[in-house]
Length: 333
Image 1 (spheres, rainbow, N blue to C red):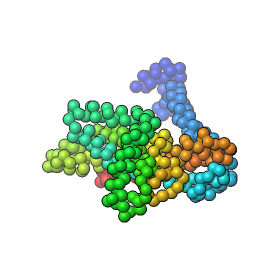
Image 2 (image 1 turned 180 degrees about the vertical axis):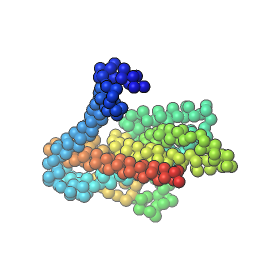
Image 3 (image 1 turned 180 degrees about the horizontal axis):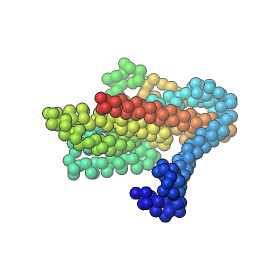
Image 4 (image 1 turned 90 degrees about the vertical axis):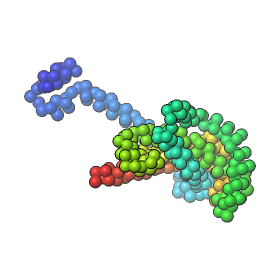
């Protein structure tokens, strides 16, 4: 073994004395050191890209930060004519539309993933999986066009009136129905994030050991009980990751939301009312930025969007770690 290690080290151009301890011989291996350096530089490049994005956005929005300070995050007025800018309506619109999208997308995605991994026959599983993954490749602007010609008339004619008739006593379903608004934006976002959550959830369920399923069935469980008690709990950590991936996709979506949300800088309790998101105001405003403070305010919106995304991903990682730790402790017990 020692002779083999020594010959390999010589071939790599770094002769290693056999008298040295094995850990030291490995540290002296030139090939390992070179490989570690190259892969480490790749990781540093990604960290550098993220750091450069944060630095550039901070520097380019410095004027807006100095003028408005914390009032920028708490202000609800967005008036380029009088040079008054507040990001709160767009932060509200981004968070609410993304949460509503998840409420609609998660049950559909998890149900589809369970069907594909546990219930679908082989001749159905392949085509349906392909079609679900195909949804993720459709450009955002195409989703927006479909929403304009199909989704918005459907919401204005059927969905919103039905919700108002049944749940009109709630503030969420009151007010005039335009078709464009928070409800339509959340629905198009739900359609867009479904393929991401479904694909990841399907892979998670596929990774569950077959022994889990067989053990549940051997104890007399039905297929539904087997899925509920053996498959879903085992893949709980992966499912949380899939949902957070969909949330990140929903928060950063731009074109489709811009085309259907109405782009109004107001905070309204009604889901029928037009609203705006941080991504949509950036897309709409940059072509109209006729003076520096306006552009700087838009860049600061982008900085806030980046910070919100980082915070959500950090919380998602902590949640995954906590769930994984609890699950491993339970299995160990």
